[in-house]
Image (cartoon, rainbow, N blue to C red; front, top):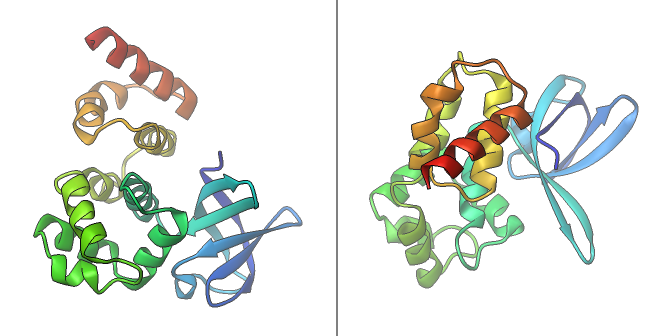
Length: 191
């Protein structure tokens, strides 16, 4: 799984970027290409989706946006393309506010979201998106720890489980894999 690509934006379209990393151009489907500029060296957070018909890389401007995307994937009926489309239609902060306030009317206006899916988004995600915003606002957080948090969220661990580990994990300087192993060890001992 890729966490991010760090390279030069060599091409840009309505819903994609090509990120040149060491002479290899990665085609990245993205909901907000206007946040990136041609010819600049940029970090693009990545979600790697593999299906029978091929591999797709979905890109994000920030770790916060990627974490919200991962949460959207946990909602029944929302796949990577739908989640990317949602993030292209509304800002992360407005999406969080809509979910926290139970704003069905706003969520139903998003592309491809009907009443049933809007209700499911609120049911599944209300109260669970704050961690993603807190992670990105903490400028002193270790990038390896950021990767580990993303990995744990991707594995399905809940916000409160990760919150309880943050104080202990942030005391050490480890690689993302070591952080994940340590977190899983602590979670295993707690059960």
